[in-house]
Length: 517
Image 1 (cartoon, rainbow, N blue to C red):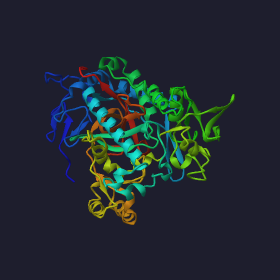
Image 2: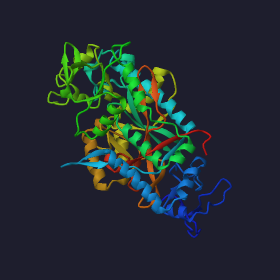
Image 3: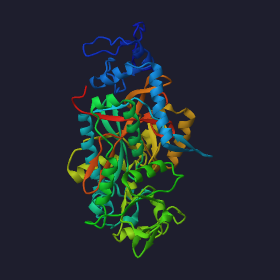
Image 4: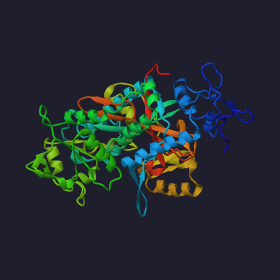
């Protein structure tokens, strides 16, 4: 495969295969710092990738100049010490995640890169409008498919696709949901290419990562205190208050102060750190299934002072496990009778059971139609082109172009159950083709995207790595977003997979004011 043209930092100007790249000021002159040249010695810009920091000719984007000047004023050793402090702050706070393998699970410190990604306020405002539009349509879709099913009856979305989805819960049919907020917390993954921002997928069941967003902010703000102030970065610190306000708005006892609890599977869950963090942030109880009991169509929490009623449950475990009397009978994580309390209208659950049908990767392809159908609006944010292997032409195209596509299992998350064809061996593609032919309904495919890249500190130097962004949309009586999100990074050179379980890490995402330098 022929390599794309590259722009590299080349302070000596001796590389005839590349254009000379300098970190210039607004007048076009070099900043003259040898240490900056050393820091970016391995940094390259490929024209096909949108670079978050540099324009195609290698000039810094105007809003990045102040950050680059700050880095240029540091030696390589100083930058590495800064990175070490940031990493140690995660270690000391116990900010970890779990990687599950075939034979064991390994707990690791969540990787964090010290160089923030910058987003202009106008870019964020555009994303905010698009995400609010999207979550509104998704909630209307869920209310419809568990109610009158107009969108299925008129064929706008195929009935068999929805009803046959493993995450469709017929038990939710006819259930009344406060404010129609089936999805109260949505984590949509946003990517940027040369064509602009797009939604890669929606995470609606139990979206995770917001604690890492907040922890990244705390660590990087302490690493660059003056820079943070000068950029006038929009705050994300109020996320806990915003989430608490949304959960309160869902309470079936309007006008009274509700009792809210966060339901966790327990300390062995990969996201337990986040569960404990959010419960502490909101000042609510963190409970497991055996802390709860159903009596007389009400849910109660066991406390040292006796049973206390629960009005709102922020659950962080999948549908299958919340009530063994309705879903998986072998579940020891949920509460028998919980769903009947919910159906009776005496409990709010966020997110509502059955929301997974709307983040199925095949149903995802119909979200633009949902926006037009329910809102009579054009989608603000585009989807990624998606081929449904359940359709004969989609399967044929996928099999024919397997070396060019990313193939995903419709119900999987975390980077599992997928094939990145361009990076797979012939043997891996042939083995995956067997799976596709055996169960085509279980897969979709998408083009291999040229994800944008940003600088990351790798072995003492800054190198370009692919990034995405997961903002968190809150929906109840109204819709709210904090300005930012979890910026995920594919830390392995050339990798497009940003999931922490697959070798990815995180950055802080700064939304900066329009007139910041």
